Image 1 (cartoon, rainbow over the protein chains, first blue to last red):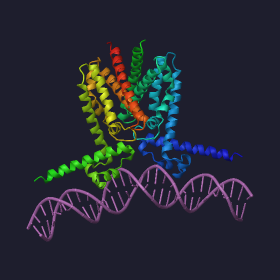
Image 2 (cartoon, chains in turn yellow, red, orange, green):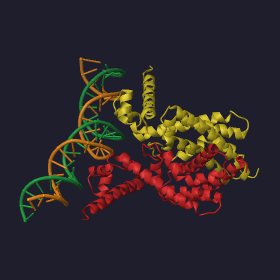
Image 3 (cartoon, rainbow over the protein chains, first blue to last red):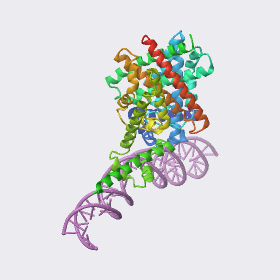
Image 4 (spheres, rainbow over the protein chains, first blue to last red):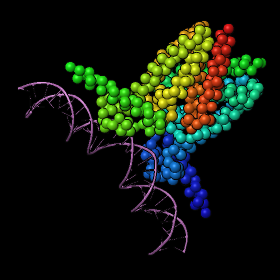
Length: 208
Length: 208
DNA sequence: ATCACAGGATAACACTGTTAGAAAATATAC
DNA sequence: GTATATTTTCTAACAGTGTTATCCTGTGAT
């Protein structure tokens, strides 16, 4: 009998709809507007149902989205790695993939880094990002001459890319406006050159 | 009669105590724990009193702290500018002053850039930062050859410094632990060299 | 048809920001 | 000094939040 299977399927569907509803509300009205009750209304269930899927409550729900976000980012970066042969160009493409991820899923990026009013009490963002950014680290490995230097340069790379995204988000231009789109395109060009500059400086310092 | 003066003085004192209480709670338990009622308890007044000093409510209170934060940062940067003769060293010192500001007043930095769960609905963070970062811009002016390039490079500088701070905060190491202090010192050295690399690359691109 | 049980809903608790209206404290006028 | 006016402050309420104990209801098995 496929009764239990049906139930499992249904359970998964409800769980997904909860996560999706949270993201939708966040996208439309910001993370401050995301509440258990509103999610419940969206999925047409009563609030306690959410606690069946996320027993630890809202924090666990956000944590899940954070993890999902890092996983998605990891895939994007991995894919971007194979879009070029030269290592330097690979790093540029990885950086741009990172940037584009933040534009495509701003609500996920916010929950991943506690931006714009969200707060997830997790202690493993660094570990998560090291996982997601491994391809970048592999490339930088070839441009550095010691584990210490690699760590430092990887951190530098991360700070540059995250800084660009973070600062762009902080500007809070009205979403969808033409000015906003121009701005984002300009910033992408900025980032592209910033990464180029970064690579140049790493090679320069490392003596080659 | 000094009655009105006394009242003005008293008013100012209460206003200041409100802001101070908010910062204290944020420092101790994070911005999520900052509530109007808790502030009221701290200053030993009832909640409505806060609305006499900040009629628009909590948002206005946070906005005020944000503005105060940018003003304080501006002063720190200005002071740092005069600690060196060479322009390049000036930029390093400015960057480190920026960094140190974020360590000394993390709660202000968080409210300035909507980090770690705070949210202020303000549209002028960019303008605020251009004001505060003017000394840096003046230095970069001499390293660039067009207003466009200046804007780009200034944005790059900001992204690097803010990225370092932002990423460090995202790690959420237990405050005050020895490991945390070591980490911060290491990161400061990282930032120092990152800025050096940045300067090198700007000069390199701009054709010496 | 009865019983057991799981899924889901209601209602409550302690919080939050905010505001209207009552009370208390102060200043002014006589 | 007493009475009035004004300003300051508090109480209480409203709607919303996260979370949980309790109740109901409908399905599955006997």
